[in-house]
Image (tube, rainbow, N blue to C red; front, side, top):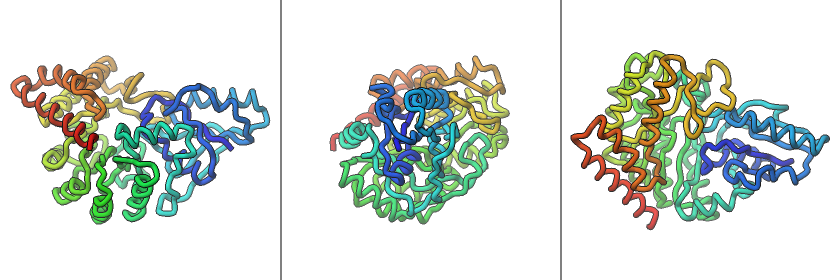
Length: 397
């Protein structure tokens, strides 16, 4: 067998975890065209009886092309879609193209630690893990008990690994591959408070800084959690806000109030270098002014705003559509698409990813600050500079 991870142009620094677990289970080599796009189609030089393709909604057309081209050259090869319990990554669900090659072990401590050495892109990952440019990605739990209607993770039973099992994976990855930091990409990291505390206790001796990338649930977040995460090395935390409008939050069944979110953000800002807040443009009940209010809220509260377009997954899989990043386009009809694009263009420059240079960071904020909070422009810029220098110092150490 041979596995292929098609190029998606989304998160090349994050390995395809579903594919990594399947490859580890079957002990199969992976041609990773997302992290290492060139040489293009290098899998065509390898003949195998079964070609497994990790088909995601965003790579559907590319996956069909790969399957067709490979079948032309190797008519006897069987083409299969790789499927498993981990079938969602970065908002883009995995879909079936051909027969499935399944790995459906329920997510638990029974999962093997992913062997990234099976990826032909592994040297790239290892180099960037060791120099601190990229963070090792780990999923400690899967699913979310909440019913936010815009989310592909709704209606997925919350399953988890033990804190001990997760800490052991990180310990081995540090010893074996020299990782210097990591990021948790759970759907909702703080579902179980005791488990969170135990995890923080176990990873603290590893002395690595880490990010809670996908985030925590604001109404479950408190000072005790923040303190435990901070003391264990967490520098960045993320929360899904979606919208600052009460009617929109009710319409999407968020189950939180803006007051609860603001309380959690206030706590987080006391402990972490970066507080990321995720928003969705064009949600049901939203308007241009309501989404613009979300932008104002981000500037007022001095957090990092990450805005993406509403993906109506309840209307079926949105093949090949990008909801954030290069090529992203609005799908919602709740208000004119050109106004949704205006919000998106306005906020793309505000996204403050850790790898951004100080100049890019300042440029990204200045237009919005001038528009919404001119009075506090100097303090905004000073805060961005301090954040940047602190991260550079952590990387040097």
